[in-house]
Amino acid sequence: MNFLYGTSVNCSNCGTKVPKTLSIRTHECPKCGCVLDRDENAAINILNRALSEVGLILPARGGDKVAQPVKRETSSNWDAVQLSLF
Image (cartoon, rainbow, N blue to C red):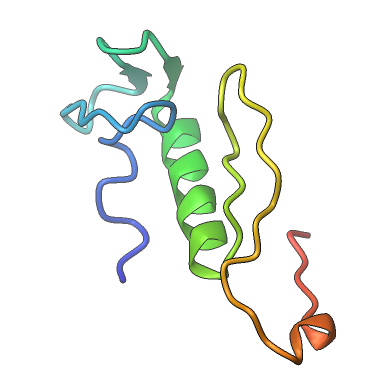
């Protein structure tokens, strides 16, 4: 999976595709009204995709919703797995 595909085009808040040229540096979503720096929007999308890949559902940005980490896989060795975001 290519983590970078569409990261600056897709809205990190609602997922709407917002096409823009490279010269446009601000992400402005017409659907949800989210306004972010283009690179910040891409970084949030990359983080969310990476967390989803390792089995955690933890949106970096979610508006009013409070998300809890969710383990998608069950394993007898799950306690031995250590994840670090830093």
